[in-house]
Length: 300
Image 1: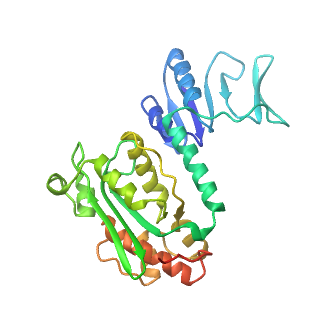
Image 2: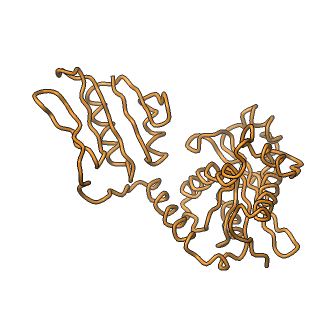
Image 3: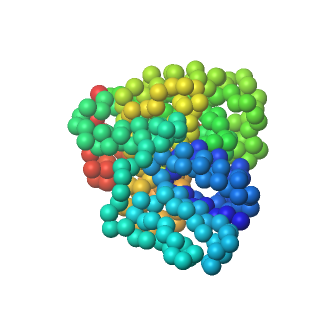
């Protein structure tokens, strides 16, 4: 039996590991494999870990009955008369290891973009664009994007982007019921993912992207860009969810519909990508009016 813990590793590695182990808690994997497979899994982790950390524990013939390995840079595994112990290091040796997988490269590019975006003069952002996606599920590794909606305010006018995307499989019944989309709609009105992304990139330009629980949407969007061999986004990103959580401490939950109701914002069609993005942009303006974003959205 083996137990593996992962922190801050690429999503592709987490998904890959579930082929052999069961994820019983976020970042904690349990499996029952041979010693050969165990060693191959550890090599796979080491090759794709990026800037993350991993620890593996497994049965062995020692005084404790188990041993472990770890990539933690602040600790070292030492053997004391057959007993495996952790030694805490006062100094962390070596440089930070950067991953070489595509997911790791996208992650590094995203971190760099966010860091640079925080230091930019905010007047450089021409417009703010609210973005929302509808997908066939919650896992960006196994689910697909079925709709993209985005909206930006230009003076007194709104510019919108709304597309459906053809997918390889079928829309799950629960998703169809939630979004109102079905296989027939996607076949008739859907477009190729690559074509939609090309048009979306033009629409986004270098403007700042706003979303609610934006991390979820960006995982899918970045994965789609990687899948279609397109460059990662270099835009600045602002997720409204953590900002709402800081100022609204007593909401029953932080689902978008609950927050919109709190701020008196009507969403005519929840779980419609375009309507959700419109409501999200309105929420951003409400937060700015209340002084909860710390800046103003420039209007062209």
